[in-house]
Length: 305
Image 1: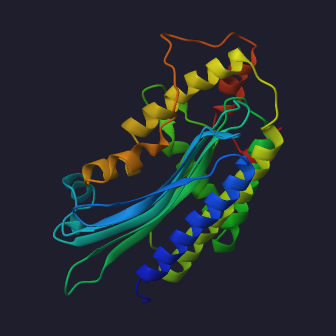
Image 2 (image 1 turned 30 degrees about the vertical axis):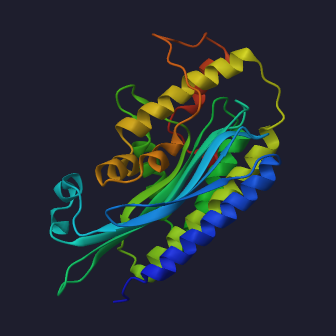
């Protein structure tokens, strides 16, 4: 069985962060990412890159982290008791982009690798990640494009991969306390090792590489769409749902905080402005209601009309 090549994974993740930041800087056209190198007292560190107040992006972060230690937090070993007594390494690239224009969706992507080792025993490892889209004003062409790229990234690895990861994404990015999806989904996977290291790594790379292919064309189509105060208010309201998910359910956020990660980098995903309105409901028949009625519903977006 092929042993995990930790340095190859790390090299890919660093290159992916560079490539994504370079491409998004060109798309923004006004601002550049600021880099913040950091170290973790318990072991490891990372490279956080943040863009703010640009021509396109109100705030965005693309974070690389590689943390390690002799012992996992109790929440991790409770979920996976076989990890108790093992040292660990966790590395990944995670990003969230919040555009100014409410017609440009917020997007999120993450690819990561985890390995836990103990002398005299086989390592326990897996890959995880995916990408998902959170529109404020839905567009069928955008949804079809997003999911078409997602499927193309998965197809070389088996016909079952896209439908499985798509369903997993719909289930994962669901706000249980509100019984509504966060957005129109995409891909999500975790604990991936059954394909063997080389093929699992290849699938993770394919999904990481597909993110820009999925998101940049949507940016370019929607960035100049006119909007006013109504659309901005709705965007801020919907951003509240994004915050709720990340602070209550997101595994990466919870693991980072519980393992002593760097708080500023972990919470870079939160939007700069947000609004909570008591018992708010969209006006029936409005574009805002359309988001709930049509787009915040699990669907086969490849065939949607």
